[in-house]
Length: 597
Image (cartoon, rainbow, N blue to C red; front, top):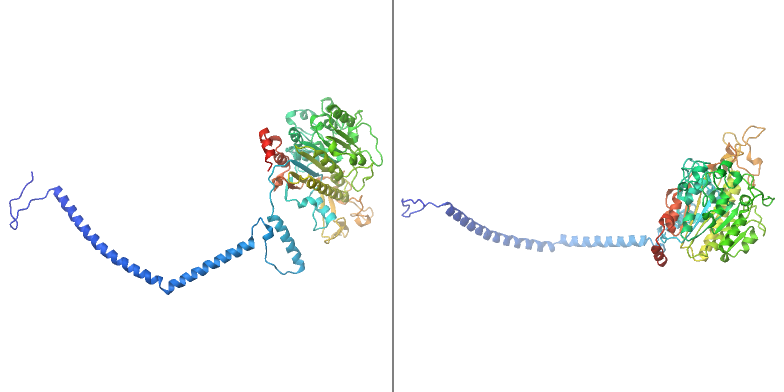
């Protein structure tokens, strides 16, 4: 119950409000107050809005606004002109025909280098990557062709400003040549890295680093065998071949097909009796009697004294006294011929220029060319008559004719092996001449590929297996003969040649009368047989341990792009061809044939 008061105020009676009543009154008062505020605010806002509109109208009509608009328009116009000029100068980097540059008037001594720089820049920015899978691979190996050898050969053949053919390829890199157990390798271990993708021990080939030098037992274990790009290509149905100016059983080609713990085991007389008793097979027999060797379509080089027993040398074709010679009565050339006859495949055995020239590459699936008892003759010495020995270029061209008969593609390895042989004897001029013959072989190959419309589908590689200790010395004048003198020693006054070696079998040549270094001007330093002086005496010129260059052109050549392990080459080739562990499934292969890009 509400409590009411009975006391009148001003003649009226009032009651005390309850909590509910108080709340209603407060809300009512609040509503009235808000309504008044809103009404007042609306009036104020309308007045303010009217004032702002008037101010904005005055601003748009002001001189300052007009000046701002004009300035902004001029600024935007200038920026547009700048962009037009910029992009007009830069052009499309993919279209070098539209690229221009600011002309500068320079002295002749500067202008030629500026022009040359522009030419090289245009080539660089207009490069296009050939990303199609390779159908064919041709791998050139300059044995012992280190960077200084390449430079010296370039100067000899084309002067300082010239280039060898492979130096014009779009892609290049460097290869580290150390082997599994040595800083400075030999050709057998480096060839295994190049062809098999695995670094192995010094003077071993086709077997991994579990096999010590000369260990027959370890080499017989198939788990230790290193498979090569040549075998992977054969498994995929491709044609395969190799061409060399050395013996076909020598270190570099042997690494393609043989598995032996010692490079000297080219025939039975180079092997210890114990190894023969344990069942190890020499390199020559592996070439002719083992499956990988038997499936090689083209074999060209020397080495008859390893394949046939008791051959007799001649002045034109001497025996190689640095190597072994078979005595067990074998005739592996005849064995090879009989094997092909039994298989019913077209084949040919060629042993001189005339037989090679007369060979129709379209008519032969297999060719065995053995042109010398030992290594072939140096190119400048060889007999060019019908009965003489072919050049590296001639063998390469004929090999391409034979291998090109297959729709499945081919793999060809070409070795310029006499570069290394000349270096070992200290004959720099002979070594450089063999580099130039390799250059001719590369040019002949590119010409063949172009004429048969195979350039875009073929990966062409030029590299070396290792370097030599050849050095380019002093400060000879530009244009001087690379085979000439560099100057006089500042300590002893004796002249020295531009080219010298670190090691040599003649080494540091001493004048018996003066007991000083021999004056090279007493000899004909440009003679083919001249041996350059060296710092250290030893039994022969030894290999160098520097990196070697690798150059590539054609399908997937961009895979060679930096400093690589030498073993990387085999993996890059197998990827480009999709062979080995990169081999496609049969379905993928069919699709690849339909869409080769």
